[in-house]
Length: 396
Ligand SMILES: Cc1ncc(COP(=O)(O)O)c(C=O)c1O
Image (cartoon, rainbow, N blue to C red; front, side, top):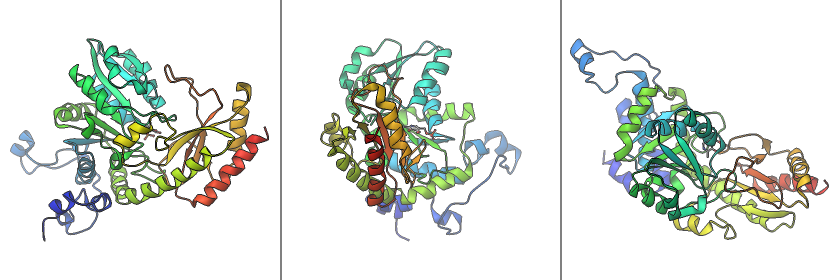
């Protein structure tokens, strides 16, 4: 057989997704890796046990199944190592626990995923870590917020629900000058559309629950580190004993094989819907970074190679006392869209966004923010359902 690894190094995204991770020749030629259920691993003798001189030593420290997924993620992220954790939220909290200690200060983007904020405001605070929230558009201006004890800068672009972009390279450069670790929740773009480590980020965080899973039936998170931060991340993970199950790890590797083609479809349908909504007079604004009208569009164009399937729009409403009634009328008139959390699955979802937690990025004044996850259904049917929602909202 010729050298597949070097062939893949120069191959396109979908080719790589179809072949990265496990090597079939490691397991009798079966195309997929075995699902190894394990706590105990046996050693051949006392000396090997004493020195742990074998590849696998205990289930929490990796199996052929979890290794296959970690190797695939390292290929995509360009990382030195990846840990698997049981949810996307754990993929944020584990690196925070790995790199922060009592007395430290962290800077967190204000458009952050709400449960990340909740972790910072409760558990991190209880552990003696102080936190400030910063404007996603701050760029190199973040320097003015860095204190002598600032140890970590957390980014998320586009931001949760309102999709603000961030100048990741500028923020990383400043943060590194001050000795801070830079983390990024890159769930929206996946490493196919943005590679955080290439832009100076040290720790790339992904809720694999979304696009890698693709079917709304698995919870899993990955955390990938550059060489300088890998040992500390791995050590914290082992210390905490937080690991992912073999079945879920297997399913995420399975999902990666088709993620590229699914994302292409999400991207195309979502842009179609976003552009159409932008033309409507009952829509005040569309919050989607790939639209030229969006304030962070230039950053998206400079750094990202694609856009995924989730965005928001502002439903034009005359007075704030009718914001909620109109938003609920829209949601209650939907038939195809489900009302539910999460995204990245095959089915379309909608929700009314709450922004009362924001400290810097205030909620739009023109109406409620409605978030849409555009699924893999036919775009004409998706439009028809949104039309029904907008008609119901108009009648309120
Ligand atoms: C941006 C972002 N990060 C992380 C998560 C957490 O993922 P999980 O649901 O697997 O905990 C979510 C979930 O919605 C998210 O939207």
